[in-house]
Length: 137
Image 1 (cartoon, rainbow, N blue to C red):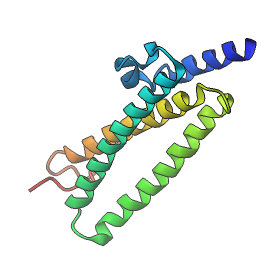
Image 2 (image 1 turned 90 degrees about the vertical axis):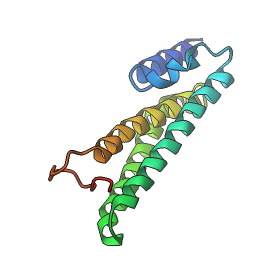
Image 3 (image 1 turned 60 degrees about the horizontal axis):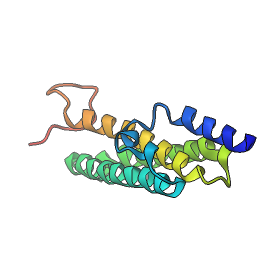
């Protein structure tokens, strides 16, 4: 019982910020842990698809392979970091039924942050030298 309470507390604390979108979908009031896990996984899957679409849009705006090289390298490094960070974040609940929800909510939260970064790249002001992505023609 004590371990379950500790797992629930860890889940609530780790999820407080990064779960906002999934909570908005009402994942927190799912009737079972399995339903909650599916809800968080669904939210992550949706945002991962959005991130991939933005990545491809950015890559399409870059003129050639040399221009897209730094994007590809940074995205690969970011994915490795995100996945490792979320595995670590969820490690306290290893083997528990809540672990998939914690892992998915972490992946979703970090993915939503990356989406914001990509969206900012896509709407840079003309002449912004700090923006690596050219404006759409």
